[in-house]
Amino acid sequence: MSVEVVLRAVAAFAECPTWDTADGTLLWVDMNRSEVHRLCPRDGTDTVLRFEQPVAAAKPRAGGLVLSMRDGVSVLESDGSLRSLTDWSEEGVRGNDAGVDGRGRLWVGTMAGPSAPGWLGRVSLQGETHRALSGTRLSNGIAWSPDGRRMYFVDTPTCRIDVLDYDLSTGEASNPRPFAELTGTSGVPDGLCVDADGGVWVALFRGGAVRRYTPRGMLDQEIRFPAALTTACGFGGADLTDLYVTTARRALEHDEPLAGSVFVVPGAGQGMAPTAFAG
Image (tube, rainbow, N blue to C red):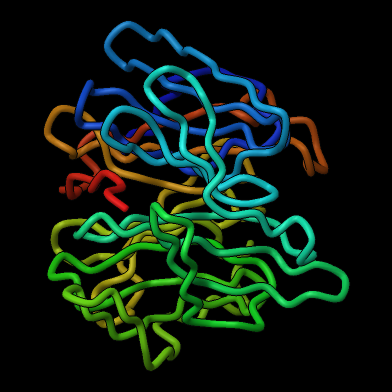
């Protein structure tokens, strides 16, 4: 498979590539620079929204966006105003990756603080938070199987992808268990996505690669990138067959000209249309 640079950027920590089917653009964030980007692959334009605190994930919402930020979850309204749904700044954790299930529910993972364990849970439009997992350290990679019956999740320090049983009708997640072990590999698991065949694609931070695992958790393929800090991946494009991959340069150990860029692998597989946050 060919790897192409879709945007030559110098992002400190690009994350969370999410296709917005409403206008055919790619949402991505430069987390440490508190930026949300909207990239139009057709003409290469990349517009930027800047905020007052780091943004770890941006997901489509009717009339705006929903953001997982350092201090909580906020919604960006169509008029440009920002409304806070949750505030965990006093809790000692930090917001990190996010995902939206097939019914439009938002799930957010947090990064543990010095004396506060992280957690994984869903957040409603009214700001109600239901925690499904506690004691996590660095939440990443939240996605679902095509039928919505499996939820995949990465707590990066465990060096594995976990899977949970998921009830799409109620939004309940249960029975967490290992899906794929990545110990002994180059890099650690970061962001992930799932294709229409149920394959799980995961970015290997410090590994310069994205791997695909079959629905049974077997390694299927690996794509290498000219940037060691691959952070996340997501399908997009007109037919949802292009795999977009974000990279970082903030923790780079050696100079890499393309670190911090956004890449694309055309025709990598068949993705699924993301669901917008509906509360």
